[in-house]
Image (cartoon, rainbow, N blue to C red; front, side):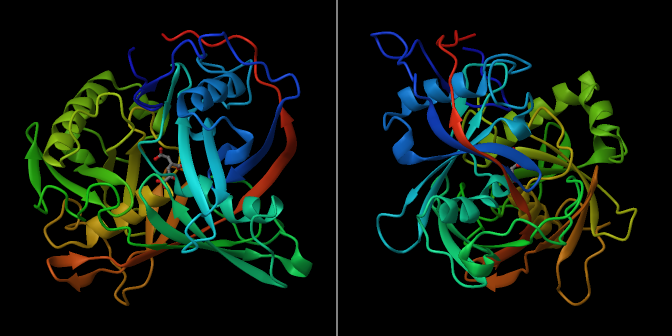
Length: 383
Ligand code: NQM
């Protein structure tokens, strides 16, 4: 197959030999906005346990492959074609396990190669809604194992009277209006999928003739000065997406940088991400334009954000020279196309150099519908 780079790596074939399974009674599903993303949340027990069967079903539910996902509940963009699979944790060290799956829009592919910190924002509320975790009287904290990277996050949110309250006064850029705050605390973000905050062992490398910083504080990413690629870094996402020369250059840099990061051939994968950096213009620490890796993000991912925040603090990293870092070591404000994201990611001296031990981000989430989804009948063709 030709993998959709924003969708995933696992080709999904013709389904079970007996033909597509029927789901005449539908599948229990909760649609939730998590941060600046939107996804379908499932209990693991409501989906097939076999990953290939599960993924084939998810394509039918989301309406992939189809650029409009018209016959499914996907939103026709990588940020709105996401799935969370949740179960009670088996080992007792966390409350729930959360597997994130990126469903490709126009390819028959589902990927578990990355985390999603935005969809994570809905996991605590979903766990309470489904009775996996009892709500406390005023606020509830849920410890979540992010299965994709085997790392842990704690979500704390309002549960007055023992029910999730989605209403509140917290605003996050990229989402109109306000909602109840959900505090996300991440442990062990450094080296989440590559094993080290600086996966190449260097603060800076030269890749395809350009200086980059390869960093992983929750999301393996390649930081690049926008100016080094002939753009300002302040363009709208659509303008950057329309720049074919930029796209070709970014694709080459990504493949080469991934090799240096020990990630092998990432041609069908959604990681590492690419982030263009420029000096801040609105009082923040830095301006960002991140790529998913082909579509340009309309804001910035949560773990993408914790990663940029850690990276630009490293002396000698790309972007450090123009970053405006808060003098008090407090949260960093990352400017993005629709506003900013505040991220706490303080650097500490570790046994083998500077690292982070925890990161924090404020998000909101909202339950959109809770019910039964009816997958389309045909098994999608692999393109
Ligand atoms: O970085 C998009 C998003 C994400 C991921 C992506 C995310 C994160 O904004 O933690 O949230 O990078 O594919 O939802």
